[in-house]
Structure formats: structure tokens, C-alpha cells
Image (cartoon, rainbow, N blue to C red; front, side, top):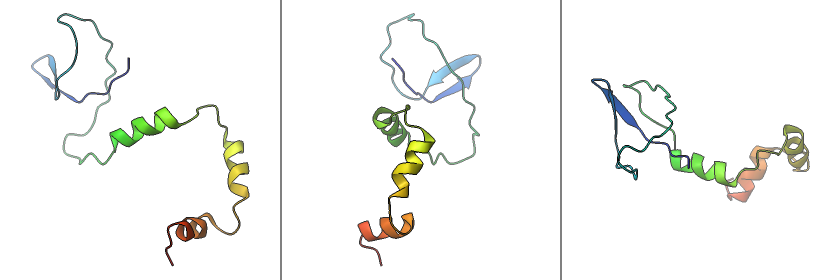
Length: 86
């Protein structure tokens, strides 16, 4: 199972910022990604998880280019028209 959890490192111990559903003394594998402490976190983690679950990693860049090439005009115009923006 894969889970992303924020934690604070304090006096030699990683302290999660949310409750974890782990058994006492259960072993886990950690991947540490350092984030600047003063920056505002603008990443929408829930949306990224959704994209990973819905996306197909086997789709190639060439397949995306082919799919986009059939849109007449510009992609901006197509998106604006779909949103009824003028």
C-alpha cells in the first residue's frame, strides 16, 4: 500500500502530522522528500492521487500529440468555447 503523509523530524524522531493506521512496531519503508518549511504548499495532493489513479502511464507523447492534432484552431479557443468563455 502506498500512502503520503507529512511528518516533522524532531529530536531524532519522525512525527506524522496525521493519525496512521499501523500496528504497533509495524515496519514501513520511508521515502523522504524535503520541503522548504517557510513555503506555502500549493500542491493539490488529492488531485494528484486522482490523476495517478485515472492516468495511463503507457500513453506516449506521440499518442497525445496525435489526439490533440485533430482539434481545429487553438487548444485555448477550444477550451474557452467548451467553458462558454468569450
